[in-house]
Image 1 (cartoon, protein in one colour):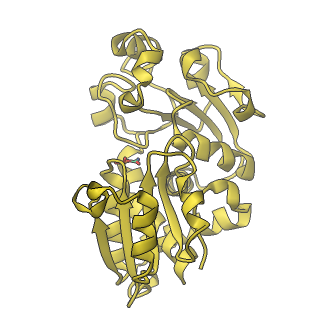
Image 2 (cartoon, rainbow, N blue to C red):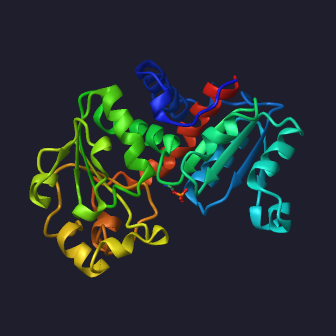
Length: 294
Ligand code: CP
């Protein structure tokens, strides 16, 4: 048994293994069928999700596991039970894994001190979203045929992005040339920026990259207050028909249409990998189950 909390905890070999297994699962369902027979997985999301929660559930069911989704609004948390006590009580029922998303950075590490049941991090605050990083790398390997020495630029609300933080760790393991671009108010502080180039203009950011990864302006984390307006952000940092890059385009979703990406590009750009990322999310999560549970 092992937890899956941050890319920071993994070796280069482990990351490559997770990504290669995800592609194997995609190519051949016989590789995953029945692998989680008799396993019970509990998901508990303290923050909203469409892609992550659903793909963890589909992956578990396709592998033969039972999957229980705790709706925290219907649980005894509403009667005042703490998040911690909720997990401890659910642990007593001996599930085989917990999928946890929490709005507090570091919460999965905190929980992992109190339970031997694998904690799989489905995103914590602004700290880490390791399963997204694995599915992104799977999509990159599928598109480009390699994982190492990639040129990647991440554009947008980087300070609030757990996806960007996970890719900082990926870039170190896989020797990516990683750069960031966005409003200065949305760049993280210096401790995150070792070895990362800050692009000087959108034109520079979009040129010569294998992958451009756009991030959502996280209105629920009040990142809207870091920019004058969404309209202005779209004008200076958005991708539209006037500045289409000659690179693959990625976005973890959900997308704010016509903010970081124009509707026209979102719906029809032939080098967009955004739907492919969602598709590969199921296989990446299968790979994470195999890594933690088997
Ligand atoms: N990318 C991602 O985490 O999407 P959800 O919030 O819909 O899970």
